[in-house]
Amino acid sequence: MNVGGVDRRAILRGGAQIGAITALGGVLGGLMSRQSLAAHTSGQISPAISPYGPVFPIADQETGLELLKLPRGFTYRSFSWQGDLMSNGQRVSPAHDGMGVVSVGGNGGQDTFLIRNHEVRGSGNLIAAPGQYDTAVQSGGRLGGGCDVLRIRNGKLIDHRGTLGGTTVNCAGGVTPWGTWLTCEETTYDGTSAGGKKHGYVFECSIDPSETTGEPIVGMGRFSHEAVAVDPVTGYVYETEDARNVSGLYRYKPTNTARTYGALAQGGQLQAARIVGTPAAKLLALGGNNAVAAVGDVLQVEWVNLDEPDAAPTGGASGPYAEALSKGCLTMSRGEGIWHHGDSIAIVDTSFGRNSAGADGRGLGAVWIYTPSTSNPERGTLTLLYAAAARVAGNNPDNLTISPRGGLVTCDDGDEVLDDFGEGQRIMGYSAHGEAYILAKSNVVISDGDIAKMGRTGQFPADDYRGAEFCGACFDPAGQTLFVNVQSPGITFAIRGPWASGNL
Image 1 (cartoon, one colour):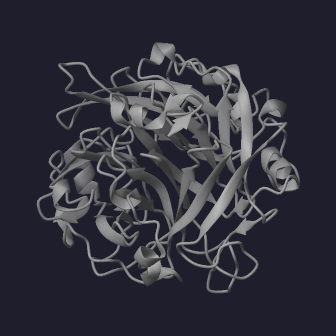
Image 2 (tube, helix red, strand yellow):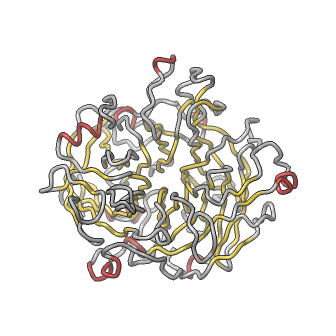
Image 3 (cartoon, helix red, strand yellow):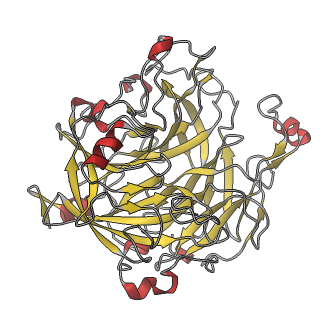
């Protein structure tokens, strides 16, 4: 299995860096057969039984509040809440979103470094960080999006501070095998008329804020980015676009293959995916005029070069999407989370399917698996692993992660759903056959008394926050801790439990 003179298996056996996980197991291992997916070829209509059991309200080890519902035997700790004082003296920004475990090390290897996005739209408090992109005053304030670095030791926060400011709508992103974080702007906002800059780019962030430059990687395209995933063998960066029914699937082939901070910004080739034999294929729903008929379908993919990655939006679509469509490339509904593991890449389309009115691309979501060809780097396959046919089974999955054991996890982001465990957004796990089950539920209901007891008066209002989305799910390399955010009020959690009793 040799790609460009590099033995893929040898690299995957290395396992020393984040992103180069070894075994191809769990949800990505040996499930791409019609037999294993036959039960839900038209979409899943109810949650599968969780291998971890039902969920119950569990008290937070930090505050004592029952903020999450989890299976028996699981524990968690909250930290870095919206409005908390950070180590650099600034307050934690709101709208916690995408996040990744970027590095481990320090203190005898016990420390875990996270980088976390803040999906702040428009003006807000500029995140204090050495790396700044757009600091112009626009709409009465400065842009409030960006990223923080969080240092965790034994499940507890010991330091948090900004690493990027002056960006906007930082939704998701992805870790790199060389220990940095790629944060994505989910917008094509142009602030030049107000003295600012164009937006819609990917930025690279370091756990050392002094190394973060705040310079966009223009070659990776200007569009409503959602997330990225790096193939550790080729160094190609796969990218999703979140724009209703005008979303492409992209990848970036960097010119500089040094795999160090800043190499991606030195240029490369942006490409878009095209379905072989089906020009301008629409992957919006099962059947109809779309290219996919059933869960388990395997589509052949080829990659097409794009000439203008920084093209301006046109006709309600991004410039790269418009060019890709003109070259016969595919359309997804809304590309969201993407994560590399083993030999494959898992991709979320949060609104694949049909709504109650029968409209394509307004459904409840799906998960795709892209597998690069081992013989031709310009080809691969795209397999529909999972599709939701009822909200209780799938509630518009958004962020996605894969555990070191190969188990897939998504964060719900649809209208709040009532299931057997009550109200609240959910974290879903997936069985080895691609069946979604309930792993956790939000139970974030906070009173004025709770806020006063925590010493967080004035940081956010008392409210029922169970409808706020989970986001930023990611495991530490040992697979012992699942980190995840609730977007509003912004809270980060570290969840531990008997993961080996299930497939995660």
